[in-house]
Length: 619
Ligand code: FES
Image 1 (cartoon, rainbow, N blue to C red):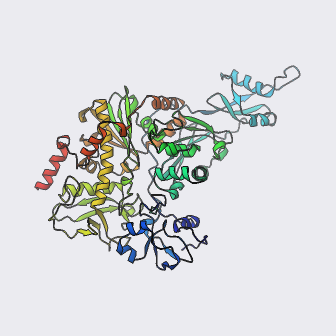
Image 2: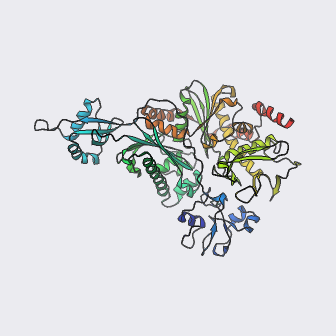
Image 3: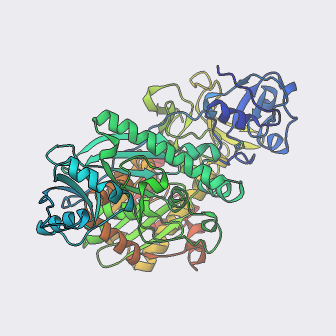
């Protein structure tokens, strides 16, 4: 146990932050998500139950001493137990993604130059002397920061005019050191996800990745979803600076760990490339993100950004540059540009569909002629949020589910084979697909009546299906999928499916025209394509056209670290990719309503699913 002394009047969620104890808080402590569950036996030292607690906690839970950490105000000494389902545990983070071959041409390179010594006959100043030597090596005019210029005379003389010059984009000298000492030139690529950070440390001369590090995004304690973070940045005093500081601090720790592992000195890291969704991009750069959350969802900037690392507080070489990939629109960010870059759909003759599933899922349809994109407000149900027993991909999360159509018995697999703590995104899709396949739910996601199995029961008016019994689970409670959970999943899948339908219609392409379906993101990585097809999340195309491409956001960031032409392409793509605002599209609502059915209101669009269902149910 951990002890902490806090001021009277703080909530238990705030006290947990002070103590460094991670408690889930999807809604950012607004009393809306019900995920910050804690158990307190002696409740006299806590504020009385709030309206949110009486609404979100069942009478059984209240009797067992459950409270919501964000609603319980500390009035005196109290002992708190954080149950497994509320803990922010280390989870499986997808750190690699598909990439393509490209020419190694990083923005930073080092050259050795030997300068002629000054004399009474040659009094060329130091900087011009260096420029002339570089020109002889074929470089154009270069510039240098004032602070480096202040050090230049000493460096040149101490190096006896034999120097290693590090250039950025061949236009700025960012470091000068003693020549002839092999020290290496390194860079880092970072994917700032809403919930996780991934960093790759790369040798810029060979293109080799030397170390990969991941960590939960520390901003998560201020809310797990983008809107909570934007609200925190917008309405809390100093909120934006605090969120920016947290992510920079985490990046600095990752750089330190990666450098230590690879035996690289931090000050040999001369370039950093960064991707993230638009909100993460804005917070990282210290741009106010408030306007992203309100119509018409306008970003501060679309094009790529170059900024000195030290201006952001990133601890690498003092004159290193940070390149932040461009955005496309309010909710289609730099990470989505990286997805397109890494999959290469923009240079293929074939028509492709690319989906990056996340809190906001980005969808692209197109080929080398033209690409069209949208962002679908899928919410975070696929990440296990807003579901009674939903969890992220942590140890003990159920990740695969099979239901026997004969006796409705369940087989499941958990991450690391641990006792189940809840159900993660991929298994929730499995659950809905299996319940439908077995005829336990109808096409609207409602449990059918008159089905006889002990796994089905009604609790407080809500029908639930037991996936894991309490004696099998780590939480000591039955792990269930409720009708309410199924509706959450159907809302999320309908948003994505409607986005796909609108884009396909705009591009005038049919299922037959789609040569490739790329699914990016960690949710996609563990998704069973048959289940995704069965619930109608993806169009009915042959499964061999589907590729799971992993974390293409980091792959795209790394391509920009290693290739200047990829940076140019990223900016071109951000200009070229058309964006469709779904909320303003006349067909979106209809497509959304159609997609609320399993697999779809129009069954003729899902011949494979219809055949499969009749085979299983007829058997
Ligand atoms: S209800 Fe407490 S954090 Fe959401």
